[in-house]
Amino acid sequence: MQRALTLNLISPIYYFPVSLSLGEAVSSADKKAIGYDAVIEFAYSFKDEKLSISTIGSGERDGYTEEERKIIEAGGSIKRKDGESVEIPSGKYLFEQLPFIPEENEIPRIILPYLKDREGRFYIRIYKENILECVLQLLFPSP
Figure 1 (cartoon, rainbow, N blue to C red):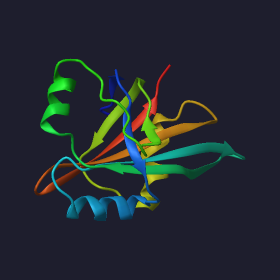
Figure 2: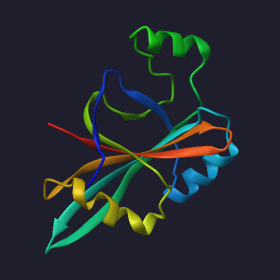
Figure 3: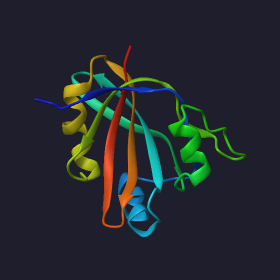
């Protein structure tokens, strides 16, 4: 049974565009400062009972500044910076933080229980939580 939660993202999260695979994003996060954040947006579709997944885009950002954290904690929104053209839009998401970092070829098996339609999109977010740990989060838009 999945442990997914509902996440209501009040403000979008903006990223600078980069071309990253899941493996590259995880490797990059290991070398970055705490708070580093990367996202990969995927499209999926079922055709002839086969699941296809393709990358739509990816982005990365450094951790929030102290001033930005205070704004977020007060319920405010962080404005998009020049060049930030990738985003996780505000909205309602089915959310799960995985207890491990999977290989890219494991993603179809992991996401299968969350797919409710024949096609759609989802996000994988890689976040450097502390000096030793990066976490991987799955976000599926929810009606």
